[in-house]
Length: 315
Image (cartoon, rainbow, N blue to C red; front, side, top):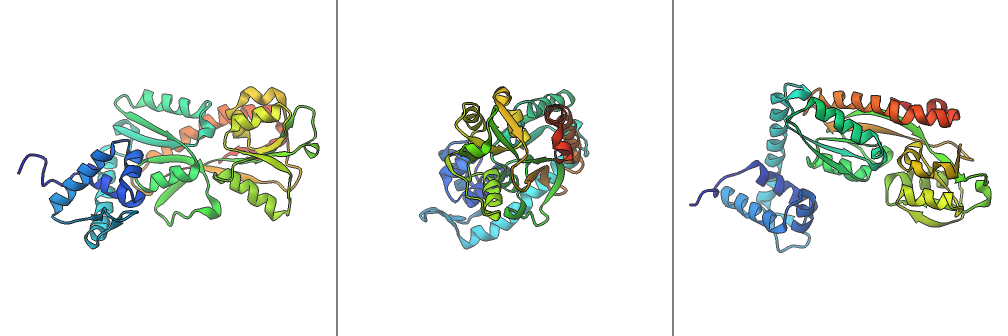
């Protein structure tokens, strides 16, 4: 037997779990950032080491064999133990952390995320940072799949339950607001919707449906910048949040921001991590995040729109 065969590795286990969750080698490869051939090689090596076929690769989508289903339970336990061991070595202190995989929604891209990473990098001289941005539901899926260590995302509300597997540190609450072209009345304009493919768009659509509001709209977009550019250009009005406006501040001079012309709607954001795995580290990072939100988001927004009051606040 040549070197490298007959060994069960943590990387092989992580690859196996990614394939079982994605149910396709190509999708697992995209998630892990490697080639499909590397995924296949790891699966073959793991099956050789265990002496069992774990996946039926002929099925589309791929399915677990009975042996694979049995090993999956052990694989999850092994990776949990590895994460806990890494946390113990860090001694519940940021100074001992060597890798941090952080997921953050794009709403914080303008200033909060860069400043958070810069601050952490100053304290963690030997730490490597991996940042993932995306939709809240996608980031939380990656956290559950152990592809990320911590996630700053919107609360999924009725769409998601974490059943105790994650710890949640609230960081911010914000209202939805109406945004119209400068000097224009939203009642005279069509609505430009944020896409219902994302959580925020579904929250807006559900809120309108609950009030039996059927507002005329022609556009449904997934970009804050595109929506605000169209609003500033007079194409319509929209429903967004102060964070979205902060994310695309270049368009703020061309729009008016006002309370929703119907029942208020808000959302909350939180930092989430797998419960108990990183000990005190998520709470420390959440506190850093709150401080940055206060200085970079809440303070400036209340200066511009004092009527927001405590509907925009750090939690």
